[in-house]
Length: 77
Image 1 (cartoon, rainbow, N blue to C red):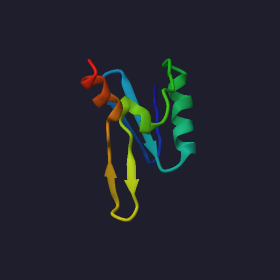
Image 2 (image 1 turned 90 degrees about the vertical axis):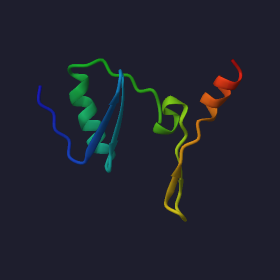
Image 3 (image 1 turned 135 degrees about the vertical axis):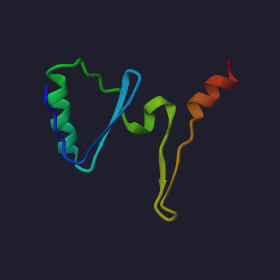
């Protein structure tokens, strides 16, 4: 199978993937290609991935990634 996607980044961790692209149409095209061979499941926004919320600060151009869900899970068990 041959796939190509301009300006796409695919991060694979075990059986999970995160796909980034500057244009949503590139992501849609790649997902359509992958869906021909693989069973895909959309599990939501990147902000919800693994309980990590991604918060961008435009003033400092920094990114903060709190894991409040994971922290609560660990502290409450």
